[in-house]
Length: 183
Image (cartoon, rainbow, N blue to C red):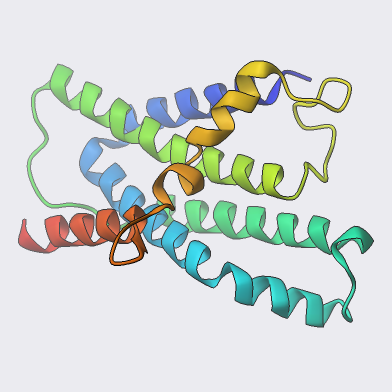
């Protein structure tokens, strides 16, 4: 299997291609939902952990709770991404720019969504010590590039408190919602 950073890059490119076909106005809606989801997960993760431990009868993380929580978080991220892409989506109003400019904006916004989705899944895989060891592991260790990329995953990069003890995720989500409402 390919290293995890190659899989991550392939997913970002795939979402960039999706963004080119959907257009950046529809992709911004997905970005808003994904940012909001990241903020909620960031704020409520301790409660999710304690609830999951109660459900598993007080099992410690060594007893499979880490695998269960990692799987739960991956399912939440994948589910929210699926729902935000499927059916009637949150679209931003406006007119699409010229063909070339629209394709570039769609690709950039789609790549951002790929970064948010794939990066969040990778974040949880790393947080729980890669409970599904076959994903991107070569002999049980990550490559040097993958180890350096971990610091730039969405939850690490955007989840840091910046103002009034709140993360950048809250402010970016609020900015996107404001942009949607004011437009």
